[in-house]
Amino acid sequence: MIMRGYTGSSFPGDEDSGRKVSGRFMYFQRTIHNQVSCASVGLHTGRKINMTVRPAGVNEGISFIRQDAAGEIKRVKASIENVSDTTLATTIGNNGNSISTIEHLLSALRGMGIDNAVIEIDGPEVPVMDGSALPFVDMIKNAGIREQDRGKQFLVIKKPVSVSDGESWAELLPASKFKITYEIEFSHPLIGRQMCDLDLSEAAYEQEISFARTFGFLKDVEYLQARGLALGGSLKNAVVLDDVKIINKEGLRHPEEFVKHKILDAIGDLYLIGMPILGHFKAFKSGHKLHFMLLKALLAQPESWQIIRCYENNSLGEKYPSPAPPVVEAVDSARL
Image 1 (spheres, rainbow, N blue to C red):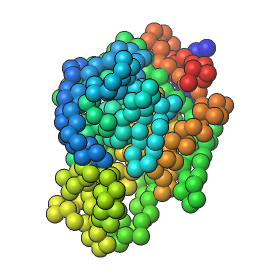
Image 2: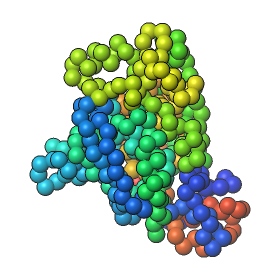
Image 3: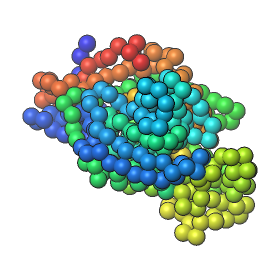
Image 4: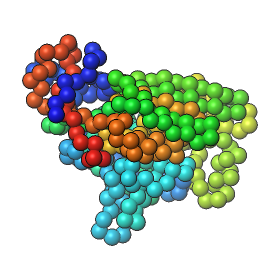
């Protein structure tokens, strides 16, 4: 089945990763050009973690390899089926191997339009760096981005899907691009109620979201560390608040850094679906658990979504206004 794009003036989402080919606007899969490495502590273990991101072939998606793991099967694909825990961070695992705190790296990969990559690490979690996704964005830019010879796949939201947990909720609605509306509410006087809207593009991600650091409250950090958690957390990789103020001497990077970090997390969590989503994600007081619940609810309702794939030989492109929507191919939803 061939679908002739969308009725909008441009193909939705990922505008920065598209380009004209023979006068037609196309969206190709992307990987990094060269391998790139980094090292930092793990947020929860406090251990030094070495990580290398390598290019991957078309349709391989994002996968992790635990270099320190025993046994022959060390690879864990970043997919919703492999989510094993959403307490404090998002963890994936199979065959006895697990990788935690993956959301910031996945967020950067999604934000920069990377479809395929292999991540090698020598510990149980992704290094925290400065608590944001900005170091990972810089890594991707330093490695270079390479287009591949296969069209991108997108998951299109056709009908609303929602989940809730008490007063917290999250939903995906049909939209002609990937849009996020996120609202948080905390009793702390420096946070209160914040809301942010974002139309995701590579430029918007890098400039408006990637810098936002994880944050926490001093009383919670002390509680967690007393129980062997958050051992790598510090003022170097998190915004920490006491009852009335921010402890970090440098303060915030942006007045809305708190809600922007929640958006950063959501972008990473939603990328576990395996491809960019075209729809409007809305959330109130959400988190990793609710993001996971939403993706599970989405997959349980196949009538609510459809996978489309950019078609390389877009002979119909010139029939559409410029920039022309690419011809896309409908993909059987049973593949997920």
